[in-house]
Image (cartoon, rainbow, N blue to C red):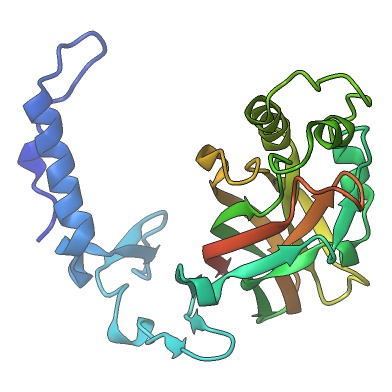
Length: 296
């Protein structure tokens, strides 16, 4: 049934007091209409009048919405999982949280060395695309139909954390001081517990990984980075700071060209030096990835 006009019969002017129950009633009526209350007769459109001798008039038609306008979407549940519809296609990925489903990164792969000068966004952005490794379960190959550029909304989320590394608590005090760049003697009066806590604190402030969205169109020689999707992950200081377990998410709109487009969320692993021992592994657990392609 159409919208109940009685719910909106009382106009509200600037400065009037508004009753909360009246507002809720109006919203409830709109929700009822939008969520299942729209009938074919409610969708109308107008055509120029064909009446002889009559100009500047419109004939109102109520058959704008017919069965022929509905086409069942096609569902693909294996391989490149997606839903292909009339006005949009949705590509979706879901990897549940489980040890066997984890995506691993180690210091031997995709490294970004910053030495002791600290992290630099400019240097990270200048890294070649090959240094950014696609995260398993967060990539999709999009086949854009037609001959026009379309908008696509890319959304993703993942749960990531660092693991391993050492706080040097089992090392000699002199070794701890040397590993912390505190000199041969400075810090030897500190207890092992104090030195370990100091090292863990420093390690937890270090960026261990950077994530970013890449898109490669049919005519692009290489993937193009979208810097607004950059996210960073901090180290945990030998598993001491659980607050560094991070839920990372992003939402971004991109333009896709007709043909095959490759969309992927990628990661680069960061170490201070090749001998760095405060960081070891990066785990990416549960993750979701969606690409919603809009044709109309």
